[in-house]
Structure formats: structure tokens, C-alpha cells
Length: 217
Image 1 (cartoon, rainbow, N blue to C red):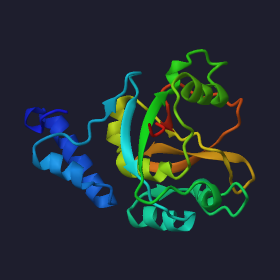
Image 2: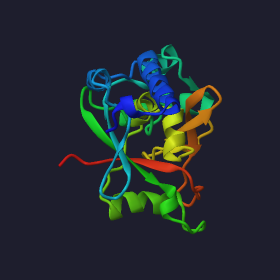
Image 3: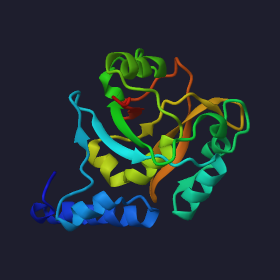
Image 4: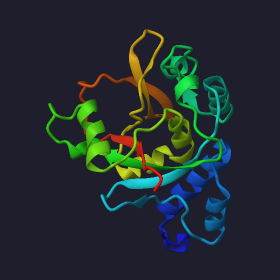
């Protein structure tokens, strides 16, 4: 973890922007604030033994409607597709299947889609299997997507070299009845909570990551 007193001007400005982002959107933890006051960078993600970025989020037991209200109040943007998933009343809907445990800590791990270089093999199914079978990661609930949105800035994503963070939870049918999962996508005004169709055979571009959880030991 770097000392912010040694950061060049551009990196220090970026760190201050991240701090303001966290304060504005209610995602700043007391531990992060304590590190910042000690002139330590609280936003540099660690890597695990596989070289994947890891960080922690704290669960909130919110309904999809409550989640949407929280994100809107904090200034985050969404469009009609993720809204329809959050508000879905179907059997595969958000409220019935994807709410987190209040106060529980979840360790998130980001696995690059670049790990499967062959375009024809870089499918949702193969990427999901790589995360769960090769590394032992757990499939996430959709509820981690808003918590990641509050924890990661678009600047951090650019520094890590990722274009989109895809959360491979069990799909939720969107307003057109297509199976979709949440993803975080960069826009001119920051990261948005978006949704992407998720069929097993659909291929993914390089430069993205799948967000899994690390099972509790």
C-alpha cells in the first residue's frame, strides 16, 4: 500500500477524486478514511496468488426498489434494462434470489476475460467454469453489483485496464424476457449499472472482467 506523500501530482489528484467519489456516493468506510488520514492509499486493490484483483464490500439487504432508490439518490445512473431486472417480480427476480446479507463482508475477485484468448472459446459458460472450477471462486449474487459500483471508480477501472465488470450471477429476465446479468460500464459521467444478455454460448471480448466471490474459509 503506497504512501500518498510520494505519489506524483496526477496520481494524487486521482486519489483525491476517488475520495470525493466515495464520500459523494456513501461508499467510504471508516477503515478507508483512517488509512487516508495516515497518508496511506486506501483504494489500491490487492492481488491474490493468481494475479487477480481482490477487494471487499459489505452487504445490504435491500429490495430491488430500495436499491434503485439508493443508487439514484447517490447520483449513479442506470437505464431501462437494469431497472427492469431490479424490479422484476418473476420467479428469477432480484428480490427473491439476489439480496445480500446485511452487514456481511463479501470478498470480490476480478478475473480477466483475457485468460481465454481464443475468441471461439471465450464464452460465458467457459469463463464461468474457469472461475469456479480452476480457481474455486463462487458464483455471485446480483446484489454485489451495486456494492461494486459504490466501491470502484471509472478511473480505477482504467488503471486496472478493464472496460467492463460483468457479474455472472444467475440471470434475471429483463423486460423483454431475455436472461441478463448486471455489469458496470463506463460512460462520460462515470460508471453506470447496466445489464447484458447472458446466454451460455455468448462470447465475450477481451479487456473485461468477471466478478466472482471468494468463498468464506
